[in-house]
Image (cartoon, rainbow, N blue to C red; front, side, top):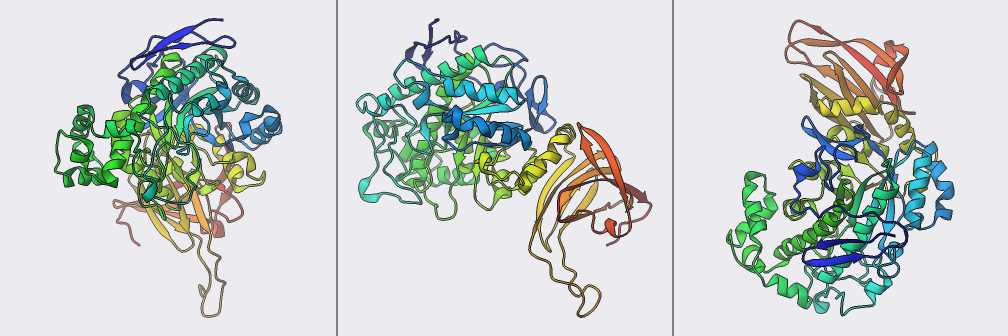
Length: 569
């Protein structure tokens, strides 16, 4: 048994272990986004661990030395706590093309007694995933999970003197679609930070010891942090922090962002006078908006320090996720977790938590595309850790925003014959093609409803995308039938100057240019098998107009013919 010690902030932390836990590498402060998205790994390892790397205008996740596309799903919160419960689930996931599973490391289970660590549930996830060629992303359910502290161990929650609770204005509680009876620890407690960081460092050191083939490719630090019920923590610890000067690190960082600063945050700052010094109330206003900025800084610094402790022990990419807000029926901070990495707080979080490789949205609202657009800013890679099990969303994420990962929640509950799994079967065979198109900015993803039209531009071609259409009246009065309302979706990839691969359902595509007349030359239906194109039918006649059928996803390789002249409608 070995003992490891590290310093977190100004707190020396000793880690006592059950089993073997590796010695942590020297602590490295001051990590930047660029140092995480690079071959050089925090923690002293170069070029071997999974990491992020810039590729053209996007970022890619590098696993075993090559780009990796994380398509899979997230388990229900409690599933991975029991290896027996999970036993039949692993084969179901593997047989349905789930390449990446988001599992759980619970502080409650990992450190049931202070200083005694138990990694049995984590080890089983790694063993079962490895046996099936599945990669893992682990969530560290530490002090915060869904803006509550229910995953903190009993020894933390019972010691309120050492680990103070957050306090809310009980006479003016901000209520939303949740109860307010769960424990919530104050993010301003230094003892809580030290304990959480120590436990996370022990987990990461354990991964360094037992996961030498990198089954675990990334780790999420905490989950949907923030404060519910009030715009800010009113505890004595939090109040003392609120009355101090705003750190110059934040103000200078916001100032350097110039025109890229989120418009809402700029307005909040300007409305309070645009000050470059002062207390939180003076700089950002004594109201809910200013409170949210204050809490965002508090939570971002907390998560960053926990992340740094872990990355020092094992330099995997680390990130955190957001419970979205404002959103329908939750417009005020406190109705959604105040202080979390929501879109309008990304600037604060990127400055406050530079150790994180990316910030991710959990998307259950209808505006999936709009949400991704809000996070696809300032070099933030798109990784979706939670979403509805809707196949169309995967195509939008991968194509329109070059996502490195897409994971519907509760993946073990998705039926075997689901549209999602059928889409994964197609996408998994062409991941190399997708990754190359993402890097070269030659890809677009879409979802389109019956009768709707969209346009996209790739490689000088304007592409018109149409949803399913009705034939009612198409051949004169009384002919045809009205179509049901359906959602079409797909990916469009340019693979050569005049050649595209389109994988789609319930949709049609047309190509045009401003400098030439464009017509279809050859349409080949086929499939990809281990990345190689396997042609089947040559489509012509009716199939030129009904190229992407309604019963399943179809892949078509489209060769275009350019003729001199100007394009016509």
